[in-house]
Image (cartoon, rainbow, N blue to C red):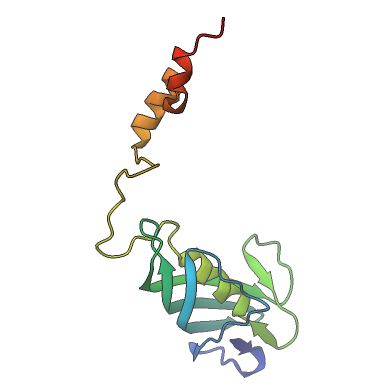
Length: 164
């Protein structure tokens, strides 16, 4: 998605909307994000002389990996951000400098998409697995107690070993 600065009308809000196609060279999927089915971006652009404010909104239909079951499930993401551009450096901390007449919003869209993905997504109805053969599930409190006691049940048989 690109903003043509020369075509912006400074007296009104300019709206740019489009479905964004992810470019594999610029954007790489990382778990838990498995697939982006559809990504729609909407930018509300305001121009004040050499300054441009962009309210960016994304909506995406994605496939995530459940952190409990590791199975894929469909999920909808929605996130927004405000980005400030200027044609020169005015000393502001959150100002992005643009050169020429085009502003490419794709990197900002990709960052917004990445930030909107939950770190531990849970599929609807997914439950934390219980203990089973060769593994056990314990709470963080149980883990901390075992760590303080300094015992590891895997080494319990060594206590009965007579070395002398």
